[in-house]
Image (cartoon, rainbow, N blue to C red; front, top):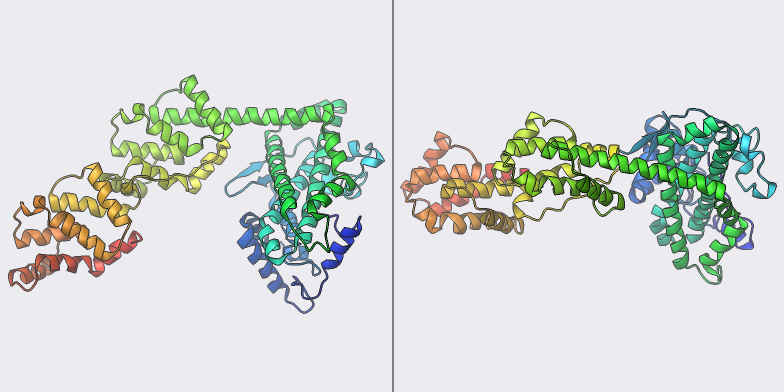
Length: 547
């Protein structure tokens, strides 16, 4: 459940509230407007500006939830979407699973529940801020009270996604000059963060002093610890971005002469945000939050060490030396390296490269290291063909990096998968590399050299037109002294064309046709090559590789 404090307290915010009803404003559910059209409109905005919010809402819709009830007719297109995302998140978070992006879910077993009201009924009246009565007052029949620390965590997470949604939508607000709507949503979510943080830390402190076994159980709940830390970090990032935007947002000065930076500071005091922040810095509460983060960091380090150790075992067949294990772990934790960086560091190390492994062994190692499984036959055969054509192990890294399997593996260890930029031309397009490799093996009758392979692949990659490909094959290979010195007759020349351009042996009908043209002098060899280069079969081969 989400409640917001919007449009009152100061004269300025009364004006903001009235602006929401200005004539001509686009609304979600104006009288007579089909609710499906309104929902489609909302989803289109989410899809463009907030893909994660879109995923959360779409997931709720796919489970049959009527999320359209959270679209309010009096609000502008973006203004109410944080509520839509917030409430849909509650629906998404079931089976104790918290969402943190594609492929990243954290399970929080909800054991040892202890009602929030046991603590909050003792909160001084002056600390009972806006959401107190609804969420944590004695007798409140909502999850934040009934489910204790887990209900509070659920709401904290939902408010975080709501505020993140508004930040994603800022370009929309900016385009439509609706900064007041944006400000109202974000300041409300900012207040919610400090409220729920205060209640959670206060409840844990109360448990620690009065029901220690329950406190210990909650602090040993690794899922709870992780979700609290991830959500808090994200919320702090949201607040930092919001604060920065308040310095730059500009309204008509006759309407808002003091600017949003002023009103942010004003409402931090008026909404109780400052006193909540101060309360959380109390030594008892601060020590609990520090302990939560210390447990999370320790858990992160152990998980990261497991990832690095596993990679050493898979690739090098040995335990990681402590210096290397610590070095990679530190880099993963401080963000100076990501998961694929470690894969590259280990599998392109002198030790690994010096082991003289076959292509088959390298491919198998990559599957185990990055996908945590043995290769399937189709994938294995495809990568084997690519490597035999001249592509390097780096192409496999790049091919696996964006996969769902690698993302899932990294999520399991809580590390950033990263991205991989290919630098060698031979690794950038399998079709080009295979074609250039055939120019070497079929036209010249020998294997490629790495420098030459990269050079010719680069020439095609930079200009993948049919004329350029034909020119490279003709001038670079078929007209070369190395090829001319082979003194092939017409029949042998046609066979080479089939193998080079089409990657297959010739059929009798086609062979006889091309040889006949050459023998009768009706076509030159260059014209025959052009015929192959512009054939439907070669076009389909090139198209299959995006050329």
